Length: 389
Image (tube, rainbow, N blue to C red; front, side):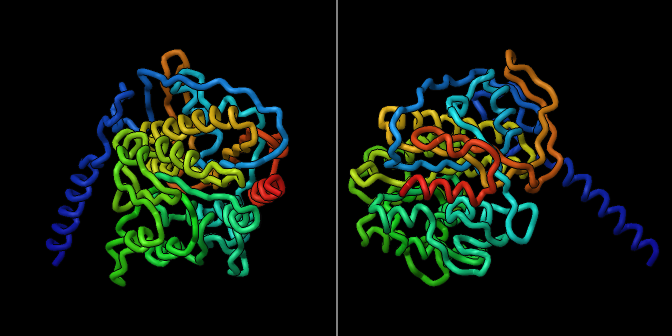
């Protein structure tokens, strides 16, 4: 028996060593910008930086449209790392007002995307894991929903995760748990959101109840798109875009889906009553969870490029409030060293989870000055509602 136990222990040790040496399927250089391999997860170099925009703050005071942009898990460190890696310039630099948001929820110091996003969406803190409901588990109308009902605004969400994931759900639907993925997806059929773009077809047409939510949405007048190249040419005034079975592929594999869908959303939603659009760089958070700085940078760049396009449009429009913030911070990311001139960074992640560090809030357009200073995350939602009135 003793020999058998020793043999099992030996084989177990060998198995652990083999697994430890097996590369993650994502540990390869997938980026046309990379000179470091992604397997060196704490280092990254950008070979060719992208050009950033230049905009001026509009002089008007009326808020007709709101474009609320969330970099999931994106704190000051992520923006700092991206800024160095892109050579000392990001589109976020053009936001004239900056503040801070405390991200705690009612029952935990360190929040999740459900409670963190809900506070931003409804203007009220809630419990960890709650989606679009308050701490008493009561559904609360989000700013997106309020804008539709009270102001007659058109509404939309475009993300790089599954559309029934926490942050988009926080703005569009309600529930006590993100684990009810089929139930959350089904709520979109009656949510009356004009523009929906993300991933998650598995929960729409491969359901345990046999429903095909895509066909149900098409019956309600939605134009359905499942390919990047079909976004720009989509017709009609209601849009459903689902491009992957679960979350979308990493930034450089999926192409500019977030950019194309955001541009399309603005075109389709722009109307005399205004619109509310939520845009999320969803996977910045995912790659911070995995402690992979190269993938994180590419997701942040993808999001920042969309910010640039949004700011250029908002400058011409003059009546659009643009807010960029995060639901929480992820990864305990520290920038250890690097070079702006060489566009290289070396970082350290202290955790694979969320942390409780405050996150930045950037604002542009009418009413932007209201976001200066330090706020609770729920106050951000309250300020947005006040400016929409």
